[in-house]
Image (cartoon, rainbow, N blue to C red; front, side, top):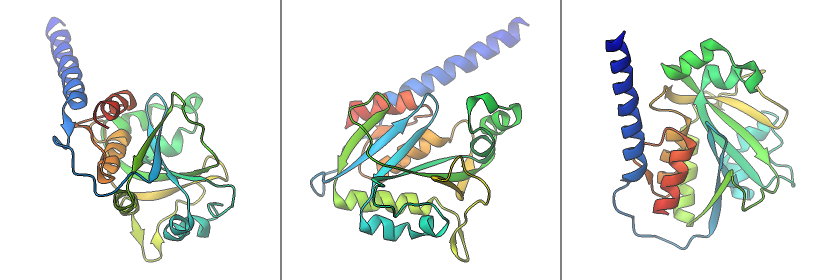
Length: 221
């Protein structure tokens, strides 16, 4: 029993050390030269375990993600100000719309290995400042690179991104098949961090939780 407890303590200490170093060591190590002024404001939205990226909507963004409206998501409604993108594990995302519906199997898949999905939501005005909202200004080139990263996360079928039928929390969101696999080391927040780096921002080297991603973003941007 003592050996088991010692082993678990060592594993926990290793995880804490990795998360701490992952927050304090920036990625990339050196800031890139800014190609243009920060003219596009993106938002990072968080809850205790998950982060999303809110993209400001204009005609070009609506056109680029036209497949959302084709699937019945009212992303082209005039009152829509943001399209919100998140990547995550299929079982946990689809089977846990609320904490009251938490089940053992989706949790186990999230900790081990699962296929992934993209979750897309729409929103009107988002209030800043807010404890769960972080805003960042990026240039047009960086904004385009961020959109490229997000678009590449959708799994493509013969007709474009593959919508998952009968999978939504409301009429204002949709789920799509995604590229990549989800596990405890490569999860929703590491996807958010990679997307932000594609957009020219710096994150920690490894950010598995919203709190570590938030700390690193404040440190390096």
